[in-house]
Length: 76
Image (cartoon, rainbow, N blue to C red; front, top):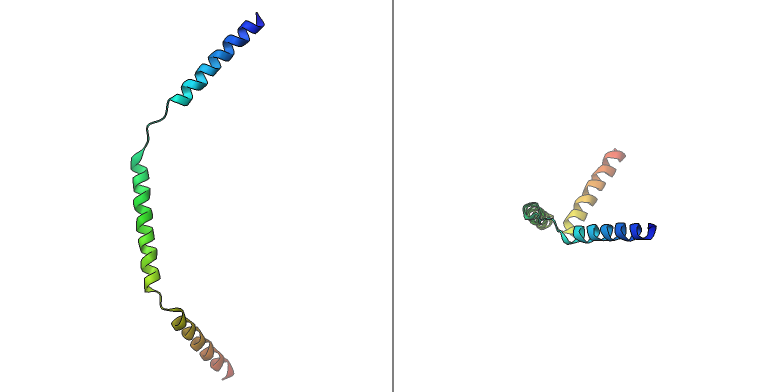
């Protein structure tokens, strides 16, 4: 009797598990498309910032010039 009950309950549990695995929720496309659009906009903004930054040599020269001015201010 206990085995029969265990088999029946196991079968019901397996059936419920298989039924749950087969039912897929409907895909939600709207948020995915919104996120893709925001990601594309963010990438474009980063590309623009990269294009607008001065070359490394110019930045390095600017930093050195400011350091020299700071040193001169400290000496006087």
